[in-house]
Image (cartoon, rainbow, N blue to C red; front, side):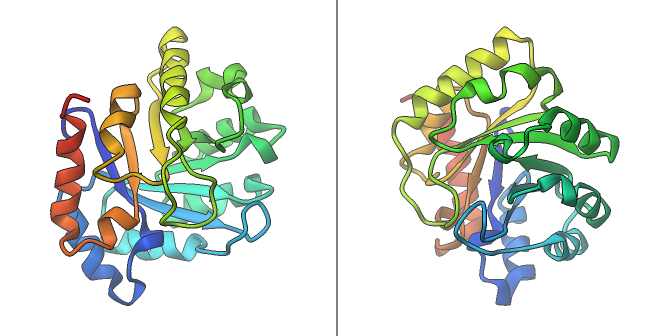
Length: 223
């Protein structure tokens, strides 16, 4: 981690035929975490990875594995992902009426516990469990697919999320995911985010390692 900023390249955008090489590239560039998007084709209109991807990544790197579950009934997978080597387990309160219970379960398995909010989901959905959060993820696109454009209104939501965490004395990471690029990361950082998921911007670039470095550098530019 550098300057309190975490860059988490999203494996969703990696070339899976060259997974080991691409992981090596982003780690060489200073990636802090590796982000894994888990989608079930129900909560979001796409189907992606399972715990086996986490197992594979754990063999390739000792970096924290940041797992984001966009699934219904995420509680069914807590133990499986913990066993696979996940470091962070983030799920959606939109499908978790017993979110506090599941956050505690995640921590009991040695993982950081996070909640993610879709663009249309208000911050009030997490107000009652801030004390249980290790991470709050603000989706800056509607989840389901990589390569989408950043929603500009997200910056105000990020700012309000930072205010909420600060007001409660929370040390939770404030993560953003969706459309993060050289053009959007500085404003998100200025609004209060400290952890950035970047998929297409990193893995579609000619030099993923350099792109990780550039994204971090952009956070330090005044906007």
